Length: 293
Image 1 (spheres, helix red, strand yellow):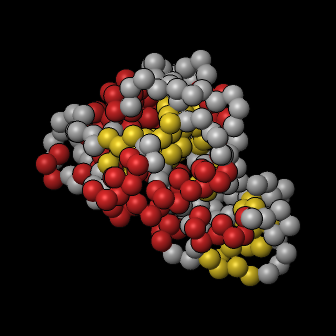
Image 2: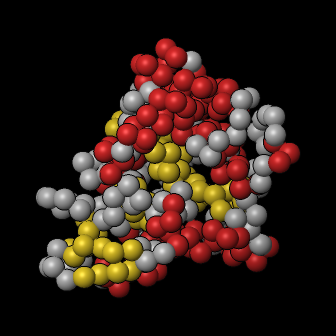
């Protein structure tokens, strides 16, 4: 893709159990964005030596991160928790690259132009990211979902923060781009440490980034939900005429990135076809690539 910064890097993380998802993500990247111009990096959270060697043979920078900070209960945490904890420290693990694009290993690209929008959105020290916000997402109609973030903010950042930002849409940290020198990294790490001083929730990195951005007014470029479609919030539809996975509501715009969150990554799901036929399939890239050709 012309115009991409050759110094930029696309990073992700995986252990041996996530390696098949990582392979799907990389394969989708090669198919959707050949010549994308980004270096590739992987945080090794427990890869086998064979998996690591395979990645390195392809020119992927594989880094085994250490624990960037101490916190109560750290000794009990599995190494996979670094998939969250290491994210605010990406410039440390992959120095010399900017912008840094993060993508979860359980994502895959359907439209490679998303990389261009991430790069452009991060220019000038802005965070390019999508919110967990779309008319098709069921979470907006669930009172427990709506108030869950409010409770998190109250616990870790106080009542005033909860009242002001607790009901704001969450930023999904599964895909974002940020220049290496942007102030967001330090603010994010600071708020992550504040959360971990209290407990070790599974959503620590997302809540920390939410608070860091909202409380400090850090600059953001909001990408549309189709840039990071959170599948457990709303399953995509499939358009056989365009051979693309699309939003499940009119006007059925094609999705750029499918994020196979929670149980969606490991089971088949019912997918609405726009021609009225039935489709039950895994949404893994390797399972549906024939539908995209």
